[in-house]
Amino acid sequence: MTLTKPSTNPKDLNKIVFSYPKLKTLIDQDPENKKEADKCLLEIAADYRPTTILFIQKVLDLVLGKLYDGVNFSLADGVDLKKLSKENHLVLVPNHQSHADYLVMSWVCIKKYKLPIHIAGGLNLNVFPIGKIFRTAGCFFIRRSFGKNPVYRATVEAYLYYLLYMGEVIEFFFEGGRSRTGKLLPPKYGLFSLLLEAHSNLPIEKKKKMIFQPVSIIHEYVPEQRAMANELRGGVKKKESFLEILKVFKIVAKQFGSIHIFLGNPIDAPDISKLSPDKIKKTTYHLAFRCFRRVGKNMAVTPSSLIGLILLEEPSGAIRWNIILEKAKAILDYCEEFNVPYTPSLKKEKFVKTMERAMDIMIGNNKVNVIGRGEGEGQLFYQAKKDSRVELLYFKNTILHQFLVPWTINSVWVNIFNGTIKDEQGLKDYLIKSRNQLKHEFYLPTIQQYLAKTLMVISHAVGRPVKSLADCLALDQRELYLVAKKLGVFARAGNYIHEAYYINALTLKDLGNEKDHFGMDDVLKKFPLVFKRELKIEKCVKYPESYSTSIIKSSMKFFVSEKYVLEKGSQYTLNKDKPIGPLILEYEKFLEDSWAIAINPGK
Image (cartoon, rainbow, N blue to C red; front, side, top):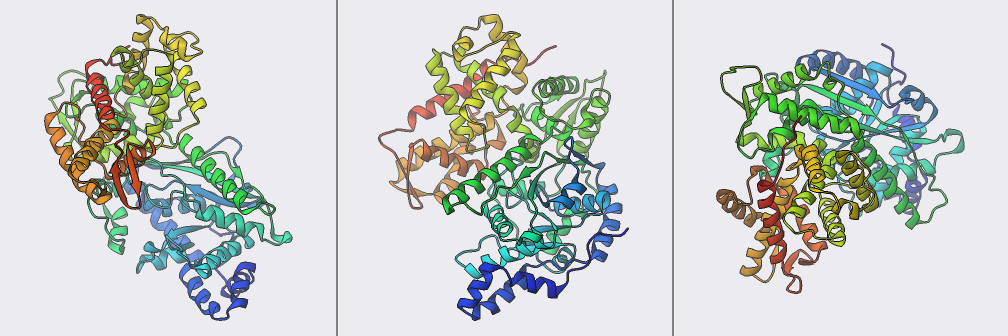
């Protein structure tokens, strides 16, 4: 195989980097800045060598076939990656689930297109000896925080300028790190901003349109899941080391299913050359979230995420295999109707065998219990193991954002039946309040889009147009039953989030009774105690996975934004003018009633 790019030329690198206007100005102001910039560039720059790429490709050809069922790569209609890279400055912006992402994406681009890419990696990955291998494979390393170091920032920007000048394909993970929860993380703006600045400074003869290419990466099983689950339960994050990174590929006893990579429609970079600083900031924000939304929209439902969604509906019980298949079909029917992507392996002709393979992987990886002796087809029962529920939640969270509307409709249904929602204004207030809570967990569409999707889903469920919130309240008992029956498979999909917010509300109330002011450390210490107490009672809290440090922190943002809690510096205090007690009662009523009145989907 012949690659299209030669090795890095140090002379070209230094010449182009130090010609960058911002860096040149800093050095002209103080010649000592040159020494610091030299050190920064040595720390940052890739030392790309085709021999390393070809070696990695051969290794991955062998390893990936043993660890994974397959790497499935697909593109949106009309997307030609090779053509895009020739005609534009191409920047790949994938989500990030595993250390394996660095190598797999590079492997795909080399194998399919002979197209080497330069990947932005955290400086924490530059550990001996893997850092040297990554660097010669095209990885460049940047610090998580630039602090107040103008020379470092200008050197990073100058290096990106060099890559664009040389026509290299650049990749960076827009979330800034691996998602520990399976949910997409809000985008970090830093590299978007630096790339836009670097591109605006290119000379005319080297300047092409810059394209940001969203990439959705979905693992059916993530090698690092257990460690990440431990972090969510309050465990200490392990420092990166060669052995830690190597664990991604050394767990040969595990089965990882498939990796799915989908390239959506590309996004043109805006021209910021004539914009004010404020406009540049807003433009960068909108670009980052356009990429984020496009990646999220294309996160496909996989067999493992389906099984995670279904098994975690039961807090501790087991589900019969034929019921699992029935629920999975109901979810896929929704996907078909509302254009939610799912993997080709879940198409009707492959559906049963694919689900069986996915369950075999769960059992083989010791995440699921099998109960029964298989008397009769589909009669075996399956149960998520208690100590693996947080790991299964990772799969579920990768797709949960696709089903927030039907879950919210179910919660509306419960609140109509229990008398909480009595009129159109009450319904509207409830939907807005639900969205205000969920926006701290997921990036959501606008209120208008959210309400429009709600009406669309209800219309489909009842088989006639429902054009307003008033129409929703005018549904008769038969139609309300149809809504519940059609969407019942999503009835408790997000209840663990409500439970976590409820637990934290109780935690805050207890802390407020104990002291006038408290910090996040106090909340993190108190929450597990309240969680254990409430889980033991089994009245409102039933899901073990509702204990998550990630949701503790996001729920604090909600309580502060809704002014139940006042924030001053790093300290919190309860707002006496808006007591948290009534909110706790609302959570209790909903959580109790969601178990008392729920209908599962039927044929």
